[in-house]
Length: 146
Figure 1 (tube, rainbow, N blue to C red):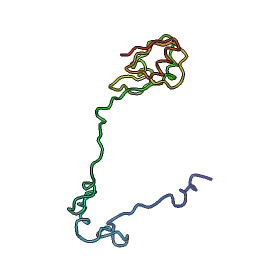
Figure 2: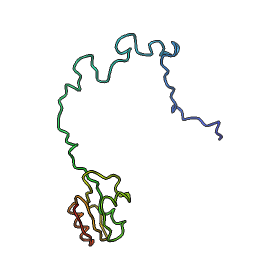
Figure 3: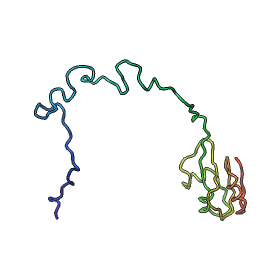
Figure 4: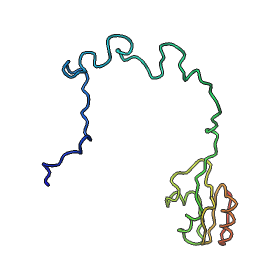
């Protein structure tokens, strides 16, 4: 086998249709748009129904979106704190610098209780779950709500 004999798999390459390239192509003259009218002139926006009230505007708006007031925290599980040195003061800035959290969120850090903690740490965060609080204190660490 050499590079000249390589070919794409059967049916994997499909030729692009070249519109408006003569009558022999089958898509010449009007390029498959029929004759005249709104659709031939390419002026119809998506969802336009000829002046009739569009379906999307007929449907009722349901529910309420309150996302802009949602409290968003940077989340970290206690198991990911095991890689740190014992008796370290852990806060959002430190976790961001060593890339345990990827983004600093506006409401601060929230520590979740997934996994086990084996080293004593002082953890400063905005919020702690009950299980995270218990696991940090059980390992001999302290929590500080900032």
